[in-house]
Image (cartoon, rainbow, N blue to C red; front, side):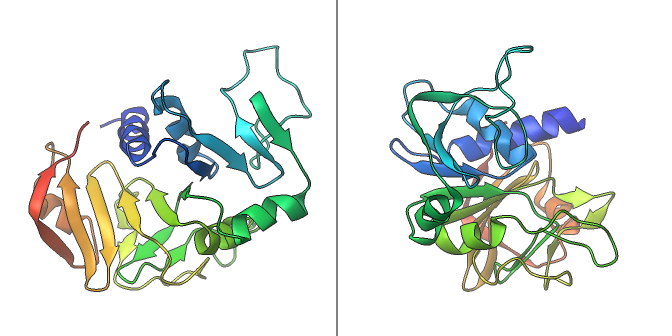
Amino acid sequence: MDRAKIKEIIAKRVAKELKDGDIVNLGIGLPTMVANYVPEDMNVLFQSENGFVGLGPAPLQEEEDQYIVNAGGQCVTILPGGAFFDSSISFGIIRGGHVDVTVLGALQVDEEGNLANWMIPGKMVPGMGGAMDLVVGAKKVIIAMEHTVKGNHKILKKCNLPLTAAKEVDMIVTEMGVMEITNKGIVLTEINPEFTVEQVQEATEAKLIISDNLVDMEV
């Protein structure tokens, strides 16, 4: 399966978790694609931690405004009714619990819901950004990521990279399936019909709990 198809599968499935009226923050990279799959009749307000709500579609080529960028530095548009504000207000929204859903990528997630997504020791990194605040402040934390990296596990028994936050992840969506973090461990609730349960478990270091109501993931 090529990477473009993998990202599309993940983004489409995450979009199904959003509800009308939600305030949603999308992390850089794959999570930004989620906005492409929100139904047109659904009112979802996207927030960016660098200071605005009302994120619109990507601007057309040569119509970009270099002063309107998201937290990842990408040029974006603002919908009618959107608003700009400074970082203190933006993080007041996040830390105050006003973000309904945040969607982030990850280097590692473990069976306790711990998240490592900001650095690998010894490598240059841009910093944690707003991730630490988002995973603690948002009402629901969804990790959208490829299931493995170069064949190596990303869903672990225990993270071994520096944590972004502890026990804050609610859901993981990969090209292989949908998993929920519970106090008993990671429950596989949906599976991509292109894979078997055994293949998903083989690609996962943590021991998966297979839901009694396991269903096929819409791909």
